[in-house]
Structures are given as structure tokens and as C-alpha cells.
Length: 135
Image (cartoon, one colour):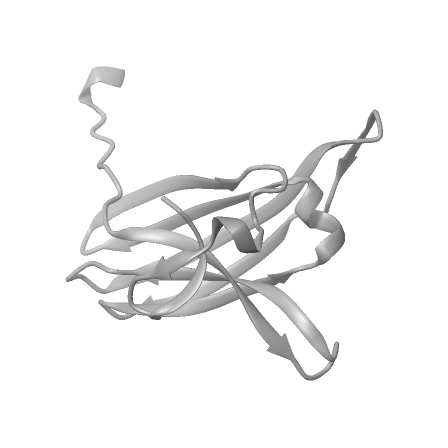
């Protein structure tokens, strides 16, 4: 029965953390974007995020955050959330679920502990800004 279930591979959809100026904080902050670099519109998009890990020998975790988007056009990007600097020392995990036509896609993206930093930046497709990409 499990062999009958087809799990399609997610392609050309990924996340990027981009450092941007924030007028409220009067500082640069890291914002996470969902990038759709495919030729297809994503529909009924759901993103669930959390952070977890060990800091100073103590297990830490954040609350779950949920984000929903009705549509994300092809070759476009949407901002999901800001990552607080204290949370960069944890694994930041994003579960992304969406439809392309009638097919459901699902993928877990993880920014590992301390991987969101200026040394790891590269040019982000679609946005053409420097950021940390996870595929």
C-alpha cells in the first residue's frame, strides 16, 4: 500500500535568509523568504516554523509559527518571517506544504545551527540579493 503513494520531489522552491535593515529595530535583521523559482504557481501554501537545539548544555526550543499564503506566483518570493538573533544559535526548521495543480508537495528546510551568517551568503535567485540559501 505504501508503495502506491507517490511523493513528488520539490524542485526550484527553496528558502533564503536575507539580512535587511529594519526601521523598528534600527538594525540589520535576518528575514526568511520562500522563493518560487519554478514555472508554476504555488497554491494553498502552508509554512510551519520552529527552532530547536542545545545552548550551554540546555535544550531550547521555540513555539511553532504558522504562515499561510493563498498563491505564490512563478518566479517570485514572499517574506515568511524575521529570525531573531538569539535564535540563530538554534536549528531553524521550516516545513513547507503546497499544491501545484492537484498535486501536493511537502518539504522540510533546515538552517542548521549558526549557518545563517554573513560568511555563508551567496546571491539569491529571483531576489538578486545576497543571503543564505537552503534547498
